[in-house]
Image (spheres, rainbow, N blue to C red):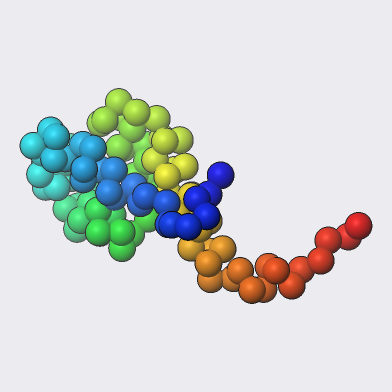
Length: 97
């Protein structure tokens, strides 16, 4: 369920505040460990890039989580953003019954 009054937390914030900072891990070290570029990690952390299924599998393996965890975080952000963009259009749609 999406929050009503705020955007869901982007997976990049989780990476930064729940993993990198507590583990004293740099973006470069994470990128090297999971086989992606530092730019990719940085853009995710800044919320400029989405977590793809590929990235979700990599993060899950490294942080001992599940790919679903990362994909669900991203999906919630994407759903929220889409709803905010098209809310007026969706409100005009009338159901079949």
